[in-house]
Picture 1 (cartoon, rainbow, N blue to C red):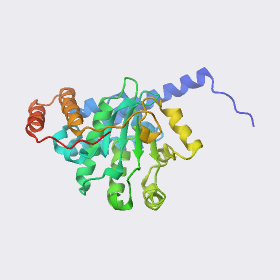
Picture 2 (cartoon, rainbow, N blue to C red):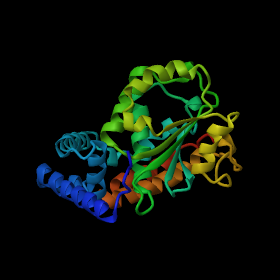
Picture 3 (cartoon, helix red, strand yellow):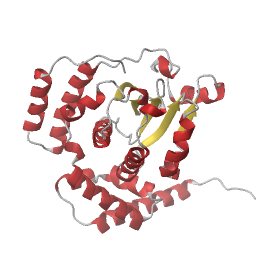
Picture 4 (cartoon, helix red, strand yellow):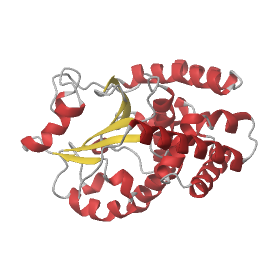
Length: 289
């Protein structure tokens, strides 16, 4: 069998069909106001359709569930001072570099887990996701995760239920936001945990996950393909030092809270409360990311 290369007209037809489905989805969800209207921009509509293979009815159901969740969870209202204790060890943070595609990079270090609150861990991650999305370069809708397993053990792993709930939250309310997830140097014992967790992962997300081992040259090609070694921390096979300064990161996140308030049109009191909390707090412990 011979496969015909897609022609320019084929691509135009496909693009027109997708545009029509985007208009259809907008029409089916009805008139929106306030934050829901701001949230459902063209990029958002496209991501939900892509997550459901351009099935308008399925995308509508998914998007409506997210709008309901956002109206009660209010992720855009979470402020850094509310979740800062979760980030004290640098177990999750937004990096100061991008991948080769210019995407925002989140660094996860599960070996530095420092709390046992499932709700606290979820709110911390949601906060970082919201901030990462706000800071995506123009034209970029996805981000990259780098997960460093140094120091990780089953004792420090989150409970299976927590892992499942967070996975569902990300897949259902942040669809198609992950371009790549690198699980870097996971210990053999992680396979026991992974055998259970992977059943919660959506097939499309599953395809974006890469296991990378520093002693395996083939898997290390992933790092060369997606990252510039000059920017990449040594913990991931690069040349820079991974430093997480909690006080400095807190200052940056407080600034991000101000930007978030302006974007969503909040009362400035939210940001003033965060700044006051930060300025009156005791010096935080310093770690590196």
